[in-house]
Length: 192
Image (cartoon, rainbow, N blue to C red; front, side, top):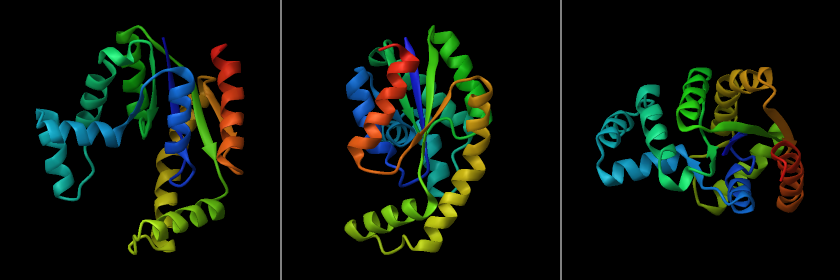
């Protein structure tokens, strides 16, 4: 079984591409947002812990996030592989994920990083904010989110590049064009 990890800044189209990749490979798309929401809705112990941090406006500690991810990756639908979106966010989480995969008898087949020019990402995010009537998403806020993403994720990308798992994909152009680039990489890396 193979895992696929999807990296990319906010507004790069990860959510859209994740669905397409999941369908193409017949694997579940697992996002940390989905894991947090389901654990909180189900009232699990780790869900309660995460909620207490989030209610205070704090980051959920890695120990809680890692426990949620491990539980989700152990679910029956993930036995033939999975796509992770939003995890790992730092190198320590990447190391923990490697241990999880070893325990589960799987391996990371490829880490895809969707790269998009910052101005294009900001334009996409502004359009989405306008469509969703989110007045709090101003350009300075968006640029700050991109800066935080870069600070957190560049070390993760380097970690996977050192393991020869990282593939960068140009995220500019139409949704279909980006999907085709991704599928070409997946076919080459996963032998599909």
